[in-house]
Image (cartoon, rainbow, N blue to C red):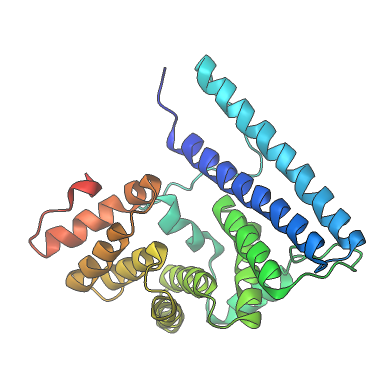
Amino acid sequence: MAEPTPLERERRWRLEDEREFLERSLRDLRAERAAGDIDQRDFEVLVARDTERLGAVRAELEQLEAAERANVAPPEDPSVAPPPRRRRRRWLGVVALVALSAGTTLLVVHLAAPRLPGQPETGGVTLSTPKRIEMQLAEASILVNEGTRQSLAQGLTLYRAVLGEDPRQPQALAETGWLEWQAGEAQSNTALEDAGRTLVQRSIAVEHDDFAAHLFMGTIDLEQGHDPAAAVAQYELFLAERPPKAEVSSAAPLIRQAFAQTGRPAPPAVG
């Protein structure tokens, strides 16, 4: 049987992450209903929405598994844009397509603001702040992984919405900073790069063991700071958190570059 392509693996990871979130969301909703923290109408609306999406996600995963067993290409997922042909892997280069600058960032966010998770189009459903933030973070991650201009702008909008409610939320700090830094790099906008760097640094100060933030910081140190020693220190922290193999594989070229520039061999985990 042929190995799945990188795009197929990425699609599976995205779907599995979404399935896990939706299953947890349904468990949490039932617990909140039992505790009286959500009224029956809101509970029914949210359960129906999450159950419908969970069914669709499971069906897509079953299609992927069937295609893998048959060793044929799975049906194309129209929600996922193919990765752009850039010198970096998609996780590092895709945001440059948004072509944001310090001035246009706010414009894009303003124009592309999506309906927030947990908030139906007609209004009426209210969630506790932690629950709302959890849902916003999950949806933002899915949107950013899709990689289209619209989905990236919507994902950034959601991360900013989270920071509006909790300015110290580490995932939102790291992801917003990373998006802004990439946009600044794409436009040679030092101010936007610096703003993004600051947010990633704040994220690490709040949550020291977030592997993604250390990965972002290492790449910023290497690419913007031209400081391979600082980058290596961050990459070592990234690897120490045992991140998913997909993340290590995507980051491997830059990790090897940083270690090479410091005269040290790359860790065995990088390959």
